[in-house]
Image (cartoon, rainbow, N blue to C red; front, side, top):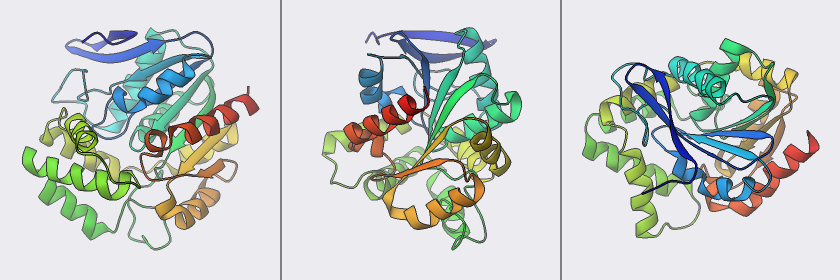
Length: 275
């Protein structure tokens, strides 16, 4: 099936990343989270392409991009983002990351700084996703729960399906998903093989980008959007780590899809205020 604005960018020999590139105007790059694809941002593509150049990418080993046995970590994903921005000759760009896609942006900042960035939006991820002090720090979960997810659910395809299904219904949305919606979410995740999903899971969980988060909020306008279920801890953590970030609270982990009108207005207002 043809995808509007779909193209491939060669990152290195044997590795191509799929991107959608539509619209005209100031560029916005959307980066999906762990094992997800450009498809999650369909409502943002539709909305923002009316006023902006919108680029959405499948990271390596996600979606339509090349499945590789190397580079399945967020240091490499950050380097890949550098190459995508260079290949598309993007200037003064707004980067929007969801979940582990935020790690890609923080790694980009670690490698390139913020000189070519106009603004940043981070959707529902701590710059330090794992901590033994999980009652005060914004983390993905207690250490034992994260370890159990890695050792039990990411060791074969069936367990990966079970894991993402439970995560989708329990954390990503606030309403009951229809069967076809749940199948769509699960099938996106399964495009990344379980052994690569496990690598990315570990790489993400052991990341620590607190310094880059602080630098970002001091250098350019930053919006942090937090899901309601951990808002008190996440808001306090964000205010401590990146105090100049604007903070909004909305929905579940996939709020930009479930509550797309509210999210799009929120992001649009942020962009207009910082244009």
